[in-house]
Image (cartoon, rainbow, N blue to C red; front, side, top):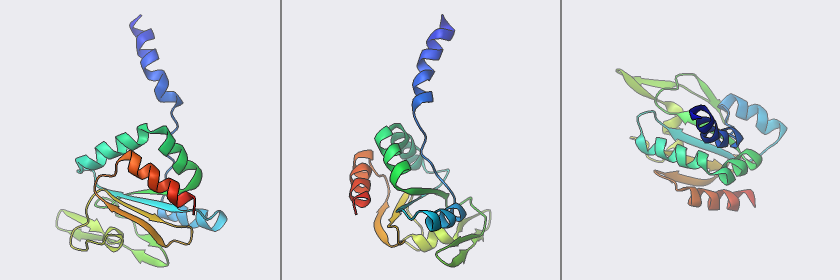
Length: 153
């Protein structure tokens, strides 16, 4: 009986589709084949707001479907990603600072050059021009509204 109840609790998890994300190198290839707007989500592992927000957004199936259908999405861990990244014709590296550091691309994308605010949401149109910038918590309803506006462009 306990197994059956556990099964019933887990079934909804299997039916929810996941948000499709890629890397910056995937993005370059995908944009050549099928240009779409791009969502760049900068976060860190230590950011509790980032974790709460990710959970809330992944639970909203309408947002997941909207992103998967109309956008490319890159989740970017700003302080642990150490690979060289090529983006918009430039190469960006990890900037070591003692035991920690930050990726140069995170600083380049952020309006706050001293210390980026997390989470950070950047949406580029299919020509890779900035159409939306948001620092801090982004409520699912606000995100849904913005993405619908952008996908209608």
